[in-house]
Length: 159
Image 1 (cartoon, rainbow, N blue to C red):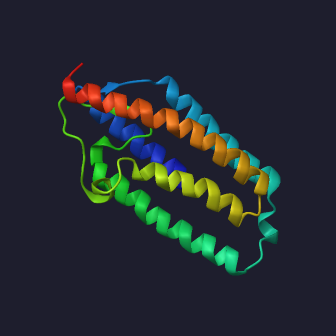
Image 2: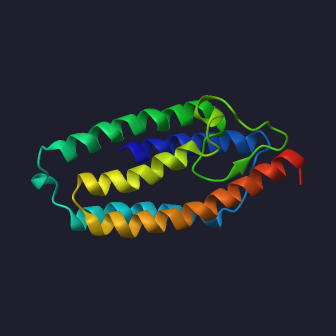
Image 3: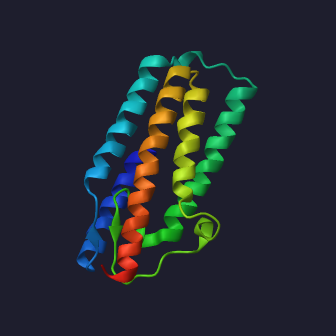
């Protein structure tokens, strides 16, 4: 449900940015992230047995950590406001956002995603999903961050 809400916010922000003269860059990178997330949740369903998760220290740690991560995620969404998106969109000439968690990290939302890709399989007792998708996520995010940095630099210079 949370991912669905993100997609609604992203779609609304994308439309608004495009109407204001925003430009979407590297749209092909979105497909890889979308596929990764869909396959991640499918793998969780196939590997885990949610009705057998014990109520122990690991479960409580994961649940508390995931709740805290959601606070950070929505701080990211709030801080970026109309610029937050699941796609790479820039508004030429707009300054880079440096408030909220963006004062401390360039890409705090990706920290949330990396930690979720570890904590959710840990919570669900899905070790294969944890290892395989954590590694795949790191590879995809490394490329994505590089593309976002390039897009932000081009928006700043107008090229």
